[in-house]
Image (cartoon, rainbow, N blue to C red; front, side, top):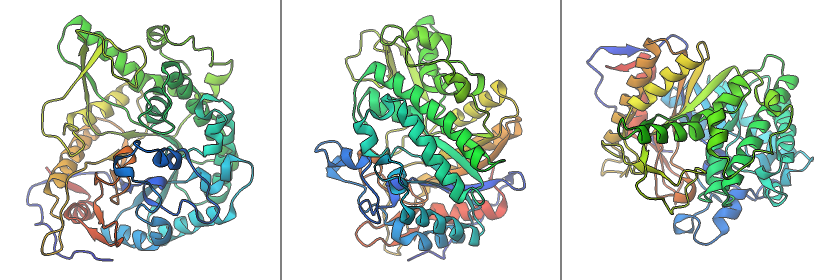
Length: 468
């Protein structure tokens, strides 16, 4: 393990102070970092199958080894301690716990997360566990996956197992990570696993994922009374290109399918009426059964917000023939937001994070919020001195923490911030070509190097704030 001792110059400007007890964290996901996909009883997930399909992932990359965190977790926790993290958000591999998604519990897989949580606590780091970050057991997909409502019940059983094992130590549970991606990229456009393409399928998967969230929330609380439960949504700032009625209506429709379709049933027990009407041409919504919405609306203790970039939309001048993840939106056009871009091509616009947090504060006052993912991919090079001088990433994080502070000052109940990501990792369909980590991983040697962004973040944590 190689770390750096030289640190960026200390800030001389006045700091924007965050509250005492603010959670300074970093986040990862099981399939993106663990590797060991066929070890110790783990069975295949939909992402193993997706990666094995030629043409699905850039350069044929897979998560088979990834950052080898399964074997190197102690070293990685030591890095977290060195950075000074007060919280770590990790996800649990469902097929490592319930092979094939069946009733049997893999005690060896369970023991891995048991050791990880204890290692975190020994380092003074709060464990924050996500139950589902997209790695559905392949056998459940073979029976219908998230198009089959029984998958929601299987998920609740798995959630109960994890709560019973780790519930005395995990400080915050997150049921699902970005169900929009699971539903609309996985079952709508086919850009993600399991690569199904159906407008109605994206909506059906959305409902069953939300049902899974509600059932799992109940299961966790039944196992651990008083458990803190959340969900992480990629809530976005959707903006019209102009003030024209058609552009404003396009923004309303995308906002409905990105934001309100998930948050409204959780918070109010109802799907937005305009979303149901907008999608009537592709779905009759018959997958919603009596009692489902009451389950979905099980109270949450906090909301996780994953934010990267805003959306800029307009009415389209001609119908799009692209396979959009959004159902019934062929007449909506997406535009590049002005400004600098990350290596993913995403615009750097921290005002979107501020606006999302303030909207949540306005619409759901008193709801505790965590920024559960925020970060950027850039081309990182190790220089002759062995340093990664990722100044673009430092500026990205500084701008977005400033935006988060602005929302907090305006009244948003923001409790913590998790950088995406702790480690360079397998970036889904992009393979290993995109590096989001504040820790560089050499995939050939598995050597870790703290990038300058990690050293900068350490100083932010020590100061409890950032240079204004």
